[in-house]
View (cartoon, helix red, strand yellow):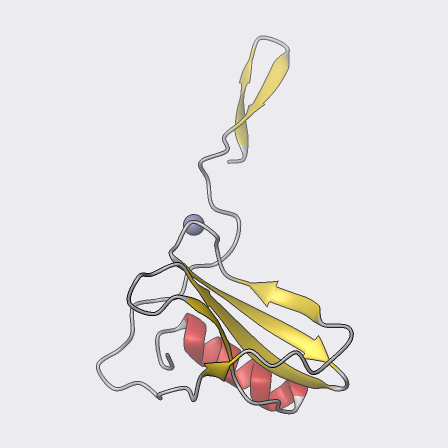
Length: 105
Ligand SMILES: [Zn+2]
C-alpha cells in the first residue's frame, strides 16, 4: 500500500522502498569484473536501478548501442563509482538479473 487515508487527504509513506534491493550474495556467485568508471559515452540512459536506501546502488545503463552496469558505493571499504565492461543489451540483462538474485556481485 502506498499510503493511507486520514480524513480527506492521502498521506504518502516515504519510508517505503520502490526500487529493488540486491539479494545477499549467494555462496557461489559470479565475480563481476568492476573497473573504474570510464567517461566514454556522451549520453547514458539509466534503464534500471536498485534502491537508494542501501550503501551500494547499482544501475543498468544503455549507451551507444551497448549496456553496462554501474556501481556507486558509499562504503568506506570500496567507495566510488565502478562499471562493468560494455556488453550487448541481452548479456547485460542477464548479468543484471543475476546481480539482483545474488548470483553475481
Ligand atoms: Zn530500499
